[in-house]
Image (cartoon, rainbow, N blue to C red; front, top):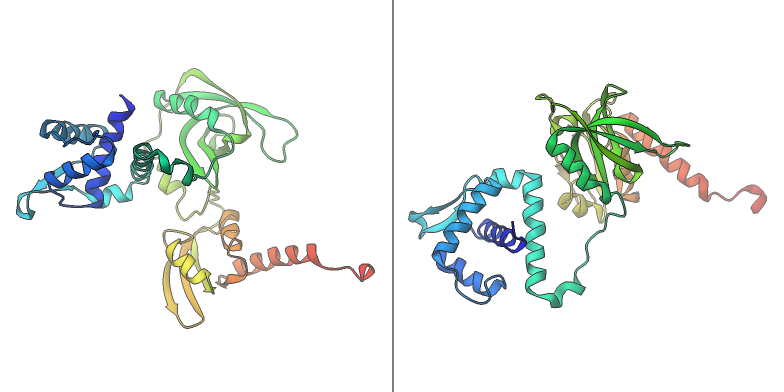
Length: 306
């Protein structure tokens, strides 16, 4: 598919998503101004073709409501917003459309770059598409040498500027996670596998913040109190989807969340510096205190140096 056609489909979805019950005339007017239509009105036939392509490619149905001025809307829009991959794809391509339409903005917008690991994305996507076992050479942090082994690639996930492969380790007989920037080589084998019907990536990472899914750590209620700038920051960018505000006063806001308090979660708390306090459970408080004591020890002046 030509890239410009794909961009047009994304443009249409993004426009109707942002402006529910928009009329065809309004869609055509926006088309003239967006840069994709060369300043010309949108032909009705082209609109209908794009509408059909959107349903075929994205499984997104664009419907017309005659009772609301023959306005167009996206059916089950809430499901679209809840689909992280489709929402990310549409948002990313919509931004690219804007940049292509106005090159003057190209130097005024910056994106966070993922330093490494991208070179294996295509081959892993190919293996996932074919359900083929891959042989990877991987050297984790703390390992003195690399190891080569086979993995059934289940899922790809990006977190904190790193791509990760989640898959079944043929050797270890369990699901494991591998950072792509620690992979030195990937080979697609002729061996096929069947993705288990029981595998659910959302269930696998249930209660997790980040990439660590340690089932030895139970999911439990964590309560934190935020001060200063962290009050609004955490309200607008929650640490976890389950986070909700339970109380607030002039000095602080208290949040609760149901999470698996893994190392990644503790790091997310530490990112808020001295602007949050863990209220419960006690063991999470103790872990944060231990981190704080270790950090403080780096800056203590020894008696000999005084």
